[in-house]
Image 1 (cartoon, helix red, strand yellow):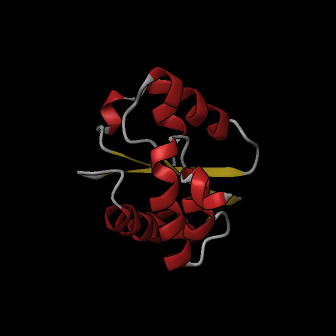
Image 2 (cartoon, rainbow, N blue to C red; image 1 turned 60 degrees about the horizontal axis):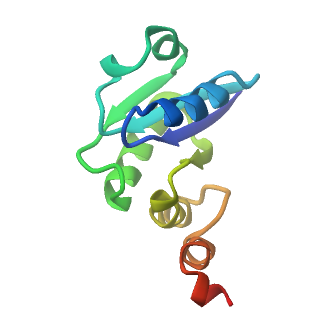
Length: 119
């Protein structure tokens, strides 16, 4: 089973659709990082999580990294670190780079966010 960690700052309806989709994938152990408490999740989804960490600022790379390290002790090392919000892509890239997690790194994320830089 592969561990996937998803960063969802707030449990908005649209965001929860992404979390549900990842939770429903076969062979995935899902951990969730958010500013919202786990009690705000729909019960059925909460039961499908391997673990949850609440942080003060889910857009802060250091807080995300600390939560990833904490979750990894419980769920095993993450194969992927995901987030749907565009504003999360640079911090997620920084964390992937720092912790050696596969996926888009900070440089590519900055290009993604700054269209002028990408050209």
